[in-house]
Length: 256
Image 1 (spheres, rainbow, N blue to C red):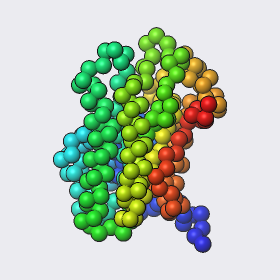
Image 2 (cartoon, one colour):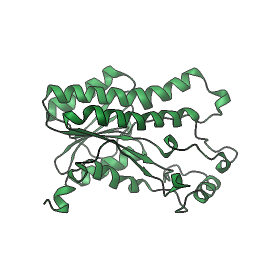
Image 3 (tube, rainbow, N blue to C red):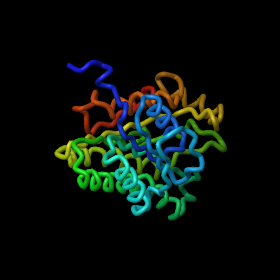
């Protein structure tokens, strides 16, 4: 039987994180770097890269050719990707009555098409390089499972949108689809769905935080570091029999 250190060991694994310069992306990159993984970050804005990595690559997730170029470069260098984390995502916040086609399409293109582009490209390269095993973690949201409680929002707060929730629900479903479809290739596919995460750089309004936390059984927002354990577990040998799952980390909010 493997020891716990062996089960959770990711040292030397090749890990790619999309949306690598955002709040969660930076957190994941820093954690994997500390644990000794060979990390590559992909983002549409690599100028914000702050965490050491083998390399940051620029790509718009909604553009298949750019995704293919970035992932191909990693495969050419490493001959494999052990773990792909589809973390890139966007949202919009104006009232839905004001939603334009352009903004609706932007969210769907990045959040759904972007995940598909990454998975499709990854699997094709995985096959070409005859990799023995792999893993994918998609980042969803608890708002892909429940609808926002609009009573928590005050004037001027950034209200969660219908299109964001719909896109994250699609990511959760896509996780299940590809978990089934790719099991025979020895690729595990799982999803992590965070609840509200406090942003220390641009803190959410105090009133919003107070009302949000009243809706959470644990009575607080999450911290970005609290999302790391899930991705380390799902990307390690400890999760070798885990696929098609959506792990919601929300302080119990979806249990109401």
